[in-house]
Image 1 (cartoon, rainbow, N blue to C red):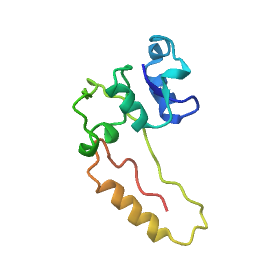
Image 2 (cartoon, rainbow, N blue to C red):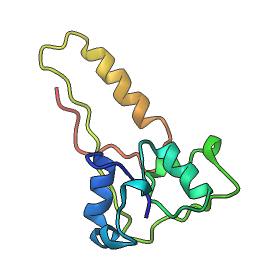
Image 3 (spheres, rainbow, N blue to C red):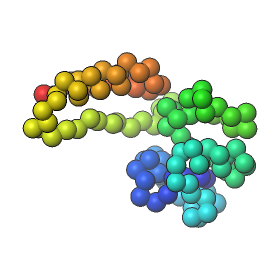
Image 4 (tube, helix red, strand yellow):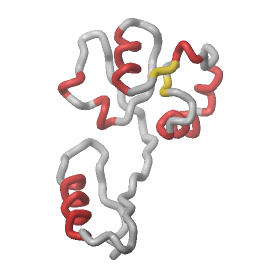
Length: 118
């Protein structure tokens, strides 16, 4: 199992969803990568398998004939990402534009949750 390095939040999320991944072949430092792109190249060279966020796995510009992508069966694991800013931030309009751009991005799995807070 190839994962991002210790302390990376995505690595922690993968291990939270799949605790058994801790023991697949032993998580050795030599089987860790510093970025998703490094991990993808490690998979392409035959070093192992990995879990990628759907936005990284479905990007057509990163497709490689040596790498097969398989989605999870239901229920798919998910994660929540939030925008946060200082209450006194003077450009709240910029936050609104960024939020709209993310929602309109058509990235797989992007869904607004809850309501917009002011």
